[in-house]
Image 1 (cartoon, rainbow, N blue to C red):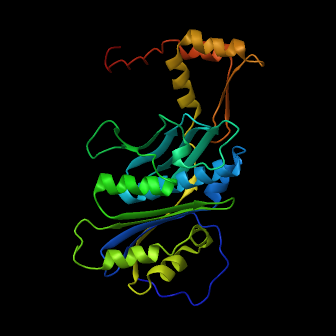
Image 2 (cartoon, rainbow, N blue to C red):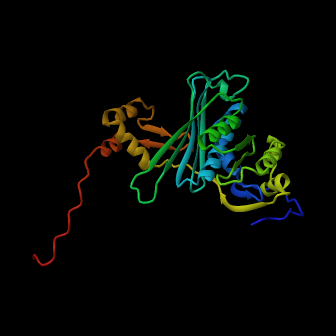
Length: 310
């Protein structure tokens, strides 16, 4: 639906939302993401320097943007393996609307954490894990993002321009309270002879990071594109959620093998193996008897006797 300009601007409330929209009369589609409480949950899990936190917030917003853009039935992740001071940057969004993320770094940090400063041989990948209709196993697709750009927004914009061969613009921003992103792309069947994209891009170029973070979201879309009009296609709430579980940790320990899993108990100060989830801070504790039990073959339950044999 198209929406009128709000008459009253209410104070900004917690707003963790993914909004898909069309800009009328331009053949341009878009996704807008705002993360408040979800971003705060991620920030509370670790002490990050401001430069690292800002980049992580941008990455989490980007994962939600792209999950909404490609309509993933599964999960989409953005992962950096760096050779510089920033070692790891990971952000993930699932189709259910849950996000998580973490970063690992070494000090001293450079004065500017741009993709060009990630280090020689660094790799930034976008990975989609999805379950196609009728499939029995998750299918995995991955694309690599070039790092010859002055910002994460610019690097990801160039990735989509090359991979999808469509005019695309993207802006990401994050501060201590909020992470946000705006993605715009010309529709594949667009009229290339029109000036809709040129007009939309000129308006997009007036948008700064501070305005993107200010909200409310519908006000932002109105301010930018009210002359053409905006039609909302749908909204999805977003939230922080970690997919770790005791069962998944037990499977991980089985994958290590009994000898290595028990060695983790012997090296632990409390006589237990402690597995710490960096995403949510949950600790999973396993004693030696518990670990040995993981490797005991489980007997299949006995089938019931058929009736009439007694």
